[in-house]
Image (cartoon, rainbow, N blue to C red):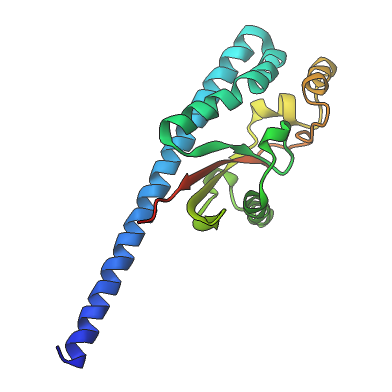
Amino acid sequence: MNLKQTAVLTALLLCLGTTTAQAAGHWRRNTARQAVKELGSNLKKALKQAMKEGGPAKAIAVCNEKALLIADKISLERGWRVGRTSLKYRNPANAPDAWERSVLLQFAKRRAIGENPAGMEFSEVVKKNGRLAFRYMKAIPTAPICLKCHGSHIAPAIEKEIRKLYPDDLATGFKLNDIRGAFTITEPISTP
């Protein structure tokens, strides 16, 4: 094989590798979006039912008792870590790790220049604990219903319930369309 043929073959192999990596990235991102949609939908359904049955106080109990269970169920089904996080978290179990914190700060900068949080997402492959992992986050915008428990003006009875369940709560003071937090996914990547 001459030098020209070697160069052409190398270029083709590099393109094929790039295309394969890009396809894997798109597949992972789309699969992560589906998991986020499932988590968001299941959580929203449970919260709406609780609001219907007992108002915001009942919804707080759902967040306290069921939100992590819903995320854990999806995590087990998919073999990933699926959850929620925030810079201003309510449940310490949802505190961001260093990577999540960095992405949340990027989201905050993007929001500060006017980007709509509903479309914000970020993903990349990182090395975590010596292993490759696909990381994905999608911003959670503050909706009108969120303000009952996460806004600046919370009814005293609701605030009392929050303080009872979450004495170190940081998750208040949000305004409509603020970034409330983000869905977060970590998928371990098997390497040969």
